[in-house]
Length: 214
Image (cartoon, rainbow, N blue to C red; front, side, top):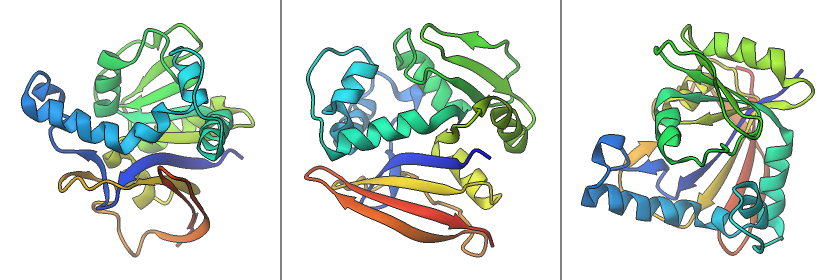
């Protein structure tokens, strides 16, 4: 059976996204500052060859350990699940050929027909909760895994429901001081983990965990 996992960046003080990244703040100094902080968190990704090729940003880029981790994460993902907030942000900023190249299930109250993009990405809108989204994802994942893409609130829901098998955190050397905490509200009696691997590069520390059934 497909494994359920997430793979995200996190600041040293535990935030997945800084304050001020709300779509309503676009065009304000707060949004510009938030995007600068986001760039510090995810800057290591933008340097990698795989990222540049996947988004058609041109040739070049690093090919070491960080690049390999990006490639492996993409290769294992047969389908993604995301929340409405992440989708709404991506709908504005992703290129026409969205970077997933798989089915994507969006957990939302909005009723909407599937949205097909060039390159093999189709967004499906799920109105009856996280477990329904997971059932639908399993039906199309094949022999690949299911990635909970984000945001933080959706990851927390899947963790608290005991539906996550493993996860990877790319811990960046940056402090946000506020924003959306990755593990806010995760029940300590509902989630237990075991560390599997810790890999360090000059830009980021990769931490891998297995989630234990409580």
